[in-house]
Length: 125
Image (cartoon, rainbow, N blue to C red; front, side, top):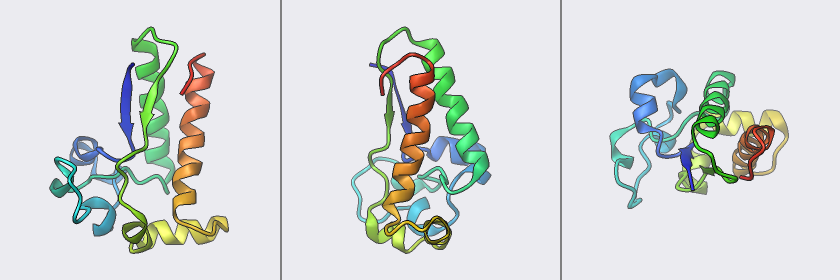
């Protein structure tokens, strides 16, 4: 099954395009997690901003075009946990702006957006 792992595991994207990654330390360099590379910075794509979302949609669409599979795995696991999310000012500001009760609701919004791209390509997320 083809997979593109977003918004976590995005360190390579963030190193190439730091403007696409969270700048807050809690989402950029998650602490006390076993994920290889999490300590390198730029771990999480900033899903509170339009440009990283546009980038993610385009990347998912491109991956869907490359692989002939009825499914496309978009990751969305290994995102820093609630305490890290609550410590990220830009994430909390977006959460409050949208009226969401939890910062995790912002991730759900992002997942739904990527799911729309996958479905538009005739695939199942």
